[in-house]
Image (cartoon, rainbow, N blue to C red; front, side, top):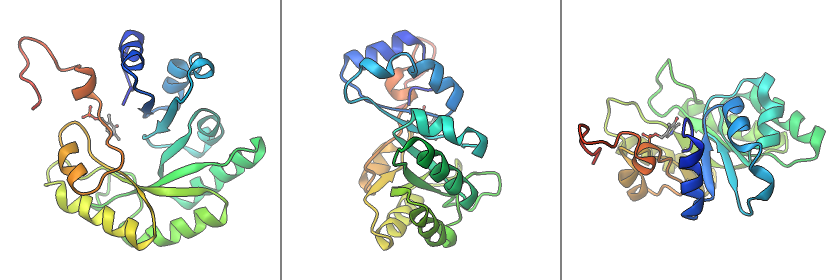
Amino acid sequence: MSKTQPPEAIDAALAAGQRVFGENRVQEAQSRWGGRRGDLAGLELRLIGPLQTNKAADAVALFDVIETLDRVKLADALAAAGARVGKTVRVLVQVNTGAEPQKAGVLPGDVGDLIARARAASLIVEGLMCIPPADEAPGPHFALLRKIARRHGLGTLSMGMSGDYETAIRFGATHVRVGSSLFGERKGPETPSID
Ligand SMILES: *Cc1c(COP(=O)(O)O)cnc(C)c1O
């Protein structure tokens, strides 16, 4: 997760061999990655933040995978944007496993319909993504996501952040979204390690 990181931090990650980066805002990602995109072999950019339909074209142009498909209208906008530039759009469906009213993501019971609609629109649905409720044990949410993915024959599971990625891996995560524990933004003599 390279969101909010300064160029030196990105350079250090690239020098260490990291090639897959997540961003949560289209414009911020454009300014961070637009200039680097051309000369980095194997770079993969993934959008992991909410996406408005009016930014679908920009997102399709910049990102390799959009992890936050959560509604039919967005599926249609992404498909249209991809068709205009001849790009196959790869997505994950974001699932609101805790059915939290304030949180993005499709409800577990509606995942099948959204996948069907996305596939009909020629999007490549590679898997599912979730952000469990902050105040609950994440394990049951990861288990639910895996169960829904299996039901639909999906192989990619994006789940787990700095605080819970080990649990997520135990539950089958193929992608963990680690930011602060990798870039160390909370490091410092006064601040305890997040471990
Ligand atoms: C920022 C962010 C992360 C990374 O969180 P950390 O706790 O810093 O690892 C993971 N997923 C999403 C959706 C994020 O926005």
